[in-house]
Amino acid sequence: MRRCWAIAKKNVRIYYLKGPVLIFGILFPTFLFLAFAIGRNVPGESLVPGLIGMAVFFTASATTPAILPFETRTRTLERLLVAPLPLSALIGGDVLSALLYGILLSAIPIAISFGLLGASLVQPLAIIAAIVLSALCFALLGTLLSSPATDDPSSIMTLSNLVRLPLIFFSGVFVPVSQMPEWGQWLSRISPLTYTTELLRVAIGQQVRIGPWWCIVALIGFSAAFWAMSITLHRRNMSRRLAL
Image (tube, rainbow, N blue to C red; front, side, top):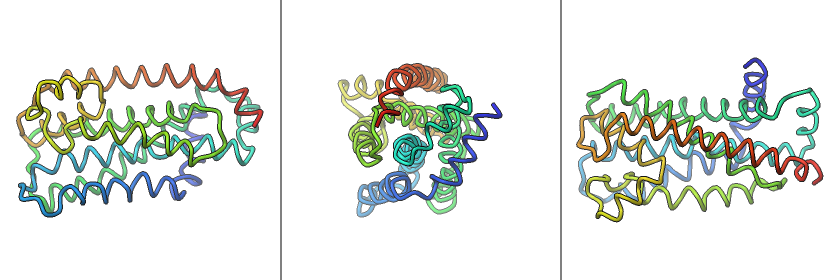
């Protein structure tokens, strides 16, 4: 844990203000949400799950895809691995920094939701579970997406958006899962973001299709799967990454 925390502190100082992280983690989802919300005659409270869910999704998954390509390019990755530092500690530190990034920046849409949009907080534990578990899950998803052996951050960010963008359109961000057609409801269950938005709807007292405990179990299951796949793929590709 001390090694993970040391890696996380290094990431906080170096990568939180990197251009790709700011663009794809903050600016891009902000304008995407505004393009959806402005001009639509919908109650402000109905926008809350999508606003918070999209913010956590993009912020928590924005830092981890950028870290390893940058460190491969600057030749600092070799120094970390000969520390000696286990690969699990290296990945764990990246995930921890992304987790903190997602949790901290989620405070902004939460303040907007309950301060300006007039949402009522009915289940505080549901919103805590949604933010923490989702930030962890999406940070691990970003780590998984950073596994290809490359020193080009833009290529990883492109891959990341090819995965992330389709997910938001069938995850209950813009349309609640309960209002989707039957095929859309089944499709939504393969996206971890679906369980985030459902938990957030529970938090503000809206009707949901998937129960809160199933959402919690699903987010934990996705996190475990992303962690296992990340460690496996990074271990397999590390020698090729170091040879770049």
